[in-house]
Image (cartoon, rainbow, N blue to C red; front, side, top):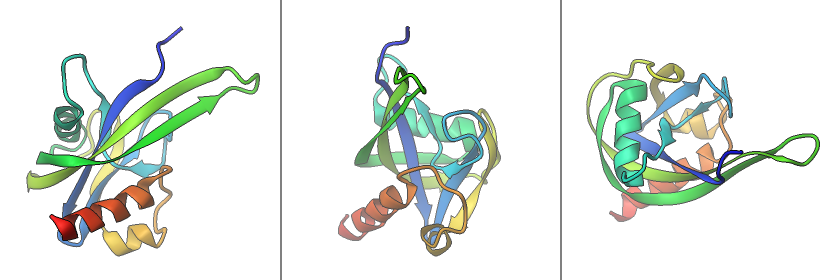
Length: 142
């Protein structure tokens, strides 16, 4: 049995009034839109993992700035047994360069208007709107 929970990092990257999102290829959340991210490797900080996963999934280069929040993603089977538990560290990243191209485990990637995402224009993974709102608030105070 796998060890739980597993730590993963999300790269929350904004460029003006746009946010970078990917369409997930694999479970959990296959087909839904969310922030690029993935597993934190042993010896790697979540900040570094966010930047690495961002580049792997989208080709975008960004500098991790700070932590925004944590999200628990827990799923149980019909019998109540734990299927998976991820602790996602949401990391605010400063866009540096690149144009989004889906890679690694992303079906699609792109920049989207923040207002459209907050209005529900795309089917989102749980917590995306909350984290995006936190990112916008953090940018106003930094």
